[in-house]
Length: 324
Length: 140
Image (cartoon, rainbow over all chains, first blue to last red; front, side):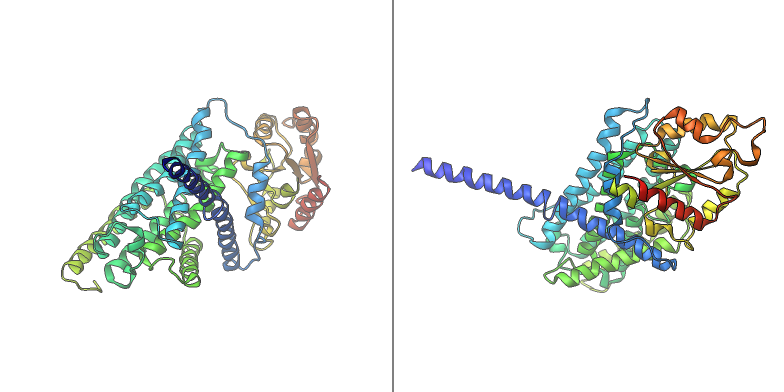
């Protein structure tokens, strides 16, 4: 009697392990997010091209870019820290893969959630930026070190407003730390929520490294600052990480502010595409900021706006006024 | 390398040119000619590049740097020599500052380098596009 119960336990364990592997590696994890991310990269390039009255690349262009990079030789500078140089893109990739898998799972089938998964998600969004800083500081190049210092200052600039914006959302939804429960509300339909959404959108723009905040990887100033010494497969991993950030971060915004990916897949897709279009439009209509202008923007303007939003949200929550 | 043909990322190297060819290269990368259709993207670091767009006659100081830049470009890569000066020193042949035609220096560095010539003074952007497309189509 005891022996059969034990065997059944081991079988379901193995099935569960295989299922988890499938979720992480194929759907909705690695393969699915990479495909959607490279398609989203193509959408960004194509819409930028159309805004500039030209034709733009064919839809398979980002896929071909990554394939080509994977086939080139990897050159590591002599004075670089080899271990950190190679591990940094892998760590960033792992972080964003975990975030993307978690968000898709909660969006599609919110059965296996746990309290506090918002905090895990916020923590995981820091990992790719941290990996970029580590990788470029291991590069042993003066261009890369300037890129590192700029990226560090940028991260210090936008992390606080981003976390404050998420706190506004948590306050508005009544202190629930459960991503599935938060995704059921739409905080954007209130003053504090709209303020927090605008600030969060600009922080996402900085995290993705889009103009006006592509200070770290500025091509013309720094010869590709942070990634200057990367080539071949390692650069391909960075490009994949950037593509996956283009999926995970707007999806995170959709789940926090716009009412989740929802049971209706087309509505969720529409919300995601709307955020993507906003990012592209901001990208194409603005010049690049200097690092001190960017820090002043995030700390003084976004910070003040968010303090107002937090106060309004707390008052709204206390007196049960929905639109504050 | 099929994917190399579809997505050649270029890095521009000026080895002592009069800037005429460089201006034409920059014109090429503007929205008017739209080389992003062909997958061509200007990158800021030779380590990201697949094609080097080399202009200029190759002065003594510049060829030292050219050897470094060529070594930093991950193989397989193509070198495009843009302009009459790059193709074979042009009108600066008897100059005291000329350190030899660039293809000779690159072959010293790497005997089986892939080199394509786009002559002209300066070559029109259309000529450069046609040169790039022809070179990529004979690559295997």
